Length: 218
Ligand SMILES: NC(=O)c1ccc[n+]([C@@H]2O[C@H](COP(=O)([O-])OP(=O)(O)OC[C@H]3O[C@@H](n4cnc5c(N)ncnc54)[C@H](OP(=O)(O)O)[C@@H]3O)[C@@H](O)[C@H]2O)c1
Image 1 (cartoon, rainbow, N blue to C red):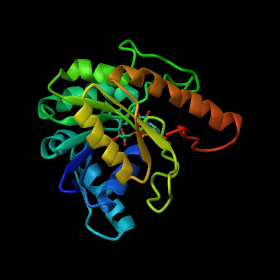
Image 2 (image 1 turned 90 degrees about the vertical axis):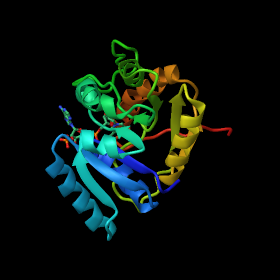
Image 3 (image 1 turned 60 degrees about the vertical axis):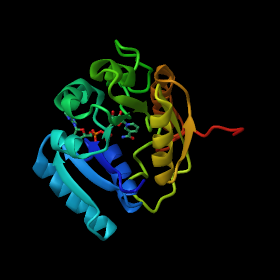
Image 4 (image 1 turned 135 degrees about the horizontal axis):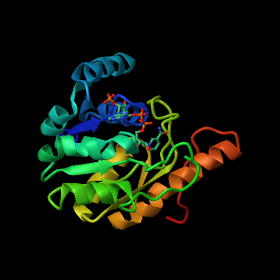
């Protein structure tokens, strides 16, 4: 599996860069995507320096999506639709991992359901059935993700209508050191995405950073 090429669109940001580094360390070919190719190249070089090797490359979002076998979308919800429209033509037949949380600033600690009920359902509707959309990582805080030596001991709920794609993504979750849990069809991402504002509330209420979830009984 490690010969797979993964593009992380918005991989210059907090959440995407942490995941990109963790996959790169496990031997996956990772392309950091950005609206500006130069920004992606610079960010990839910074991560390579942090990791001590030539693990990641950078490219514009469309170029990264074209070159990749699997694409991860890691941009704020406000940029979700436009970013997808910009890469749509390069995603057919591929898995798209959508980790977008449809937060509505400034009330980021209150659940907000978007028009399509969830960001990942909106992605599937926009991209059509030729793209295997998988929702994952929405409940994983970026707080410790960027330190690849830090063990992030939370679970990642994985939702998709495509069982094979879901199994592939659960393996990718495990490559990051977290546990992937099959959480059902893409419709269930409505609940998963809605958990993140709850976690943001918990962070504030308990004066902590980066609360996460853990499923018992498995
Ligand atoms: N941060 C967390 O703890 C966390 C946890 C779970 C889920 N998430 C979700 O993960 C996604 C990314 O979060 P993040 O914290 O990594 O976000 P971020 O750092 O604010 O942004 C990620 C990247 O998105 C691109 N971007 C930002 N604003 C944009 C805009 N207006 N239009 C187009 N592209 C834009 C930027 O890349 P370029 O400028 O290089 O194009 C940026 O580096 C979000 O949907 C968030 O809800 C975050």
